[in-house]
Image (cartoon, rainbow, N blue to C red; front, side):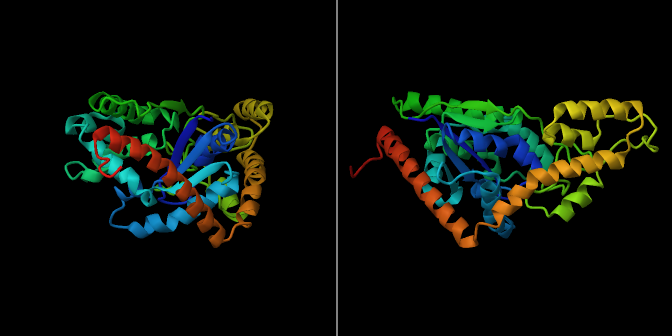
Amino acid sequence: MKSIILTGDRPSGRLHLGHYVGSLENRVLLQNDYEQYVMIADVQALTDNFENPQKITESVYDIALDYLSVGIDPEKTSIFIQSQIPEITELTIYYMNLVNLGRLERNPTVKNEIKQKGFNEGIPAGFLCYPISQAADITIFQAEYVPVGEDQVPMIEQTNEIVRRFNRIYQTECLKECKAILSKTGRLVGIDGKAKASKSLGNAIYLSDSPEEIKRKVFQMYTDPEHIHVQDPGKVEGNVVFSYLDAFHQDKEEVEELKAQYRKGGLGDVTIKKILLKTLTELTTPFREKRELFSKKDVQDILFSGTQKAREKANVTMELVRKSIGFSYFS
């Protein structure tokens, strides 16, 4: 039996190169050695987009197509839609009895996101409780591993707290604790030099961008404002072009040579942007070509099949959970 992995994304827009280098590339590798479930987390996305559900529903198809274009194989990975697994909601309700309000408010990930989103005193209950929902997402599939960034580790810790409390109270071992698989890649900086590439900030290169759009974005990238003439020494640190070359250029020795030449002087911004453009074009061309192979009906069929498989798995866990609580009245 292969170990189980759960991962996923919120459907609030198309996926970009930051998603690729941070998680998608790894998912393509993991699907060969693990039983992998990839969740399109539309319910979670609704917690801070509840007034604009169309943004979510329209993104579900795009995200699924992004998955398929980079090589996530529906024969190896179950791609499913969170809202279509009602058992997750049922398990979330049971878990809500096991977590107090203070514990949710102390969760570092939640605290940071509340600040980022400017909720202040107007925190939607659904948003505050999403760590509980996330615990249900993970445990209903008996996931042993969850790929996350460092900032999401508190969510894994809270999930395991819930698992231990449930198993202790109901004197069962039906739920498994999970471990975080930490991303080895830091967050990709935005093309404007901001802290991260982000859908909401509009400073990202998307997996589905056309060659013309990629070229436009590469040539507007932030470099070194003091590197005015080609012969001037330039700074590599904080230079977005070099950040992207570090992340995506295959020849790491060449990147180090370019850095040394740029620091010394004699290497222009246009030259390094042309090198980056060639690198990103070679990376993304297969994505666009594969994207064209799938019709909307193909994607819908893949999502339906993946969701059916995910629901079957969820039902097995829920039978154990109900039996542990004593809610198996008719069996």
